[in-house]
Image (cartoon, rainbow, N blue to C red; front, side, top):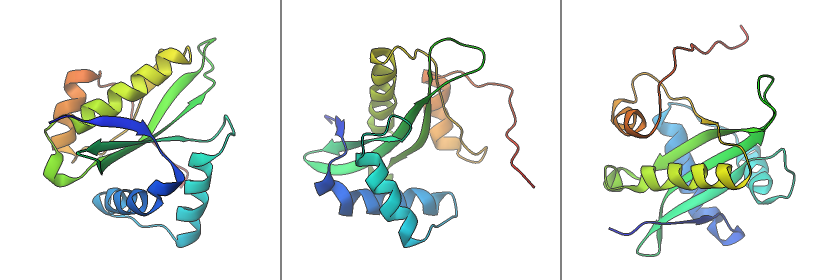
Length: 147
Protein backbone atom coordinates (compact mmCIF):
# COMPACT_ATOMS: atom_id res chain seq x y z
CA UNK A 1 0.00 0.00 0.00
CA UNK A 2 1.40 3.38 -1.01
CA UNK A 3 0.78 6.32 1.33
CA UNK A 4 1.01 9.91 0.11
CA UNK A 5 1.39 12.58 2.79
CA UNK A 6 0.70 16.12 1.67
CA UNK A 7 -0.20 19.53 3.08
CA UNK A 8 -3.81 20.17 4.01
CA UNK A 9 -5.74 22.26 1.46
CA UNK A 10 -9.05 24.11 1.56
CA UNK A 11 -10.67 21.40 -0.57
CA UNK A 12 -9.89 18.87 2.19
CA UNK A 13 -12.25 20.46 4.70
CA UNK A 14 -15.03 17.84 4.60
CA UNK A 15 -12.62 14.90 4.85
CA UNK A 16 -10.49 16.71 7.45
CA UNK A 17 -13.62 17.25 9.56
CA UNK A 18 -14.50 13.56 9.28
CA UNK A 19 -11.01 12.46 10.29
CA UNK A 20 -10.67 14.97 13.13
CA UNK A 21 -14.17 14.15 14.44
CA UNK A 22 -13.22 10.47 14.52
CA UNK A 23 -9.92 11.33 16.23
CA UNK A 24 -11.73 13.34 18.90
CA UNK A 25 -14.28 10.54 19.37
CA UNK A 26 -11.44 8.06 19.94
CA UNK A 27 -10.33 10.27 22.83
CA UNK A 28 -13.93 10.50 24.04
CA UNK A 29 -14.31 14.21 23.45
CA UNK A 30 -16.00 16.62 21.08
CA UNK A 31 -15.70 20.30 20.36
CA UNK A 32 -18.24 22.88 19.19
CA UNK A 33 -18.56 23.91 15.55
CA UNK A 34 -16.73 27.19 16.12
CA UNK A 35 -13.62 25.22 17.16
CA UNK A 36 -13.74 23.14 13.95
CA UNK A 37 -14.05 26.30 11.87
CA UNK A 38 -11.34 28.25 13.71
CA UNK A 39 -8.90 25.33 13.79
CA UNK A 40 -9.29 24.62 10.09
CA UNK A 41 -8.67 28.28 9.23
CA UNK A 42 -5.61 28.33 11.48
CA UNK A 43 -4.26 25.17 9.84
CA UNK A 44 -4.44 26.94 6.48
CA UNK A 45 -3.10 30.28 7.72
CA UNK A 46 0.36 31.78 7.61
CA UNK A 47 0.87 32.53 11.31
CA UNK A 48 4.09 30.76 12.35
CA UNK A 49 2.56 30.21 15.81
CA UNK A 50 -0.31 28.12 14.43
CA UNK A 51 -0.48 24.44 13.70
CA UNK A 52 0.33 22.94 10.32
CA UNK A 53 -1.89 20.20 8.92
CA UNK A 54 -1.00 17.17 6.81
CA UNK A 55 -3.29 14.63 5.16
CA UNK A 56 -2.40 11.04 4.35
CA UNK A 57 -3.94 9.53 1.23
CA UNK A 58 -4.19 5.99 -0.07
CA UNK A 59 -5.44 5.63 -3.64
CA UNK A 60 -6.42 9.31 -3.64
CA UNK A 61 -8.61 8.97 -0.53
CA UNK A 62 -7.82 10.80 2.72
CA UNK A 63 -7.23 8.19 5.43
CA UNK A 64 -5.25 10.06 8.08
CA UNK A 65 -4.14 13.40 9.43
CA UNK A 66 -1.62 15.06 11.66
CA UNK A 67 -1.24 18.55 13.09
CA UNK A 68 2.03 19.94 14.43
CA UNK A 69 3.64 23.21 15.41
CA UNK A 70 7.03 24.66 16.21
CA UNK A 71 7.70 26.53 19.43
CA UNK A 72 10.53 27.80 21.57
CA UNK A 73 11.98 25.72 24.36
CA UNK A 74 13.69 27.03 27.45
CA UNK A 75 16.47 24.43 27.34
CA UNK A 76 17.35 24.75 23.64
CA UNK A 77 18.34 27.44 21.18
CA UNK A 78 16.42 25.93 18.29
CA UNK A 79 12.65 25.49 18.22
CA UNK A 80 11.06 22.15 19.02
CA UNK A 81 8.17 20.48 17.23
CA UNK A 82 5.00 19.35 18.97
CA UNK A 83 2.91 16.78 17.11
CA UNK A 84 -0.55 17.32 18.59
CA UNK A 85 -2.98 15.20 16.58
CA UNK A 86 -2.34 11.97 14.72
CA UNK A 87 -5.11 9.80 13.33
CA UNK A 88 -5.54 7.00 10.81
CA UNK A 89 -8.82 5.41 9.80
CA UNK A 90 -9.29 2.05 11.55
CA UNK A 91 -9.22 0.09 8.28
CA UNK A 92 -5.70 1.33 7.43
CA UNK A 93 -4.10 1.01 10.84
CA UNK A 94 -1.01 -1.15 10.90
CA UNK A 95 -0.39 -0.44 7.21
CA UNK A 96 2.08 2.43 7.45
CA UNK A 97 -0.19 5.48 7.55
CA UNK A 98 0.75 6.55 11.08
CA UNK A 99 4.43 5.97 10.41
CA UNK A 100 4.25 7.98 7.18
CA UNK A 101 2.57 10.89 8.97
CA UNK A 102 5.11 10.90 11.81
CA UNK A 103 8.02 10.64 9.38
CA UNK A 104 6.58 13.59 7.42
CA UNK A 105 6.56 15.62 10.65
CA UNK A 106 10.14 14.49 11.36
CA UNK A 107 11.15 15.69 7.87
CA UNK A 108 9.39 19.05 8.35
CA UNK A 109 11.09 19.49 11.72
CA UNK A 110 14.50 18.69 10.23
CA UNK A 111 13.89 21.15 7.39
CA UNK A 112 12.93 23.84 9.92
CA UNK A 113 16.02 23.20 12.05
CA UNK A 114 13.97 21.76 14.92
CA UNK A 115 15.39 18.27 15.47
CA UNK A 116 13.31 17.59 18.61
CA UNK A 117 9.80 16.23 17.96
CA UNK A 118 7.49 15.13 20.76
CA UNK A 119 3.88 14.06 21.26
CA UNK A 120 1.52 12.73 23.91
CA UNK A 121 -0.90 9.84 23.93
CA UNK A 122 -3.15 8.25 26.47
CA UNK A 123 -1.95 5.15 28.23
CA UNK A 124 -4.86 3.07 26.85
CA UNK A 125 -3.83 3.76 23.23
CA UNK A 126 -2.03 0.41 23.07
CA UNK A 127 -2.20 -0.10 19.31
CA UNK A 128 -0.64 3.26 18.48
CA UNK A 129 1.93 2.86 21.24
CA UNK A 130 3.30 -0.21 19.42
CA UNK A 131 4.27 2.13 16.57
CA UNK A 132 5.44 4.92 18.88
CA UNK A 133 7.73 2.50 20.72
CA UNK A 134 9.41 1.65 17.40
CA UNK A 135 9.94 5.18 16.06
CA UNK A 136 10.09 7.27 19.23
CA UNK A 137 11.34 7.13 22.76
CA UNK A 138 8.95 7.07 25.71
CA UNK A 139 9.77 9.58 28.44
CA UNK A 140 9.11 9.43 32.18
CA UNK A 141 7.08 12.67 32.18
CA UNK A 142 3.51 12.76 33.49
CA UNK A 143 1.21 15.47 32.21
CA UNK A 144 -0.73 17.70 34.58
CA UNK A 145 -3.35 20.31 33.71
CA UNK A 146 -4.83 23.17 35.63
CA UNK A 147 -7.41 22.01 38.19
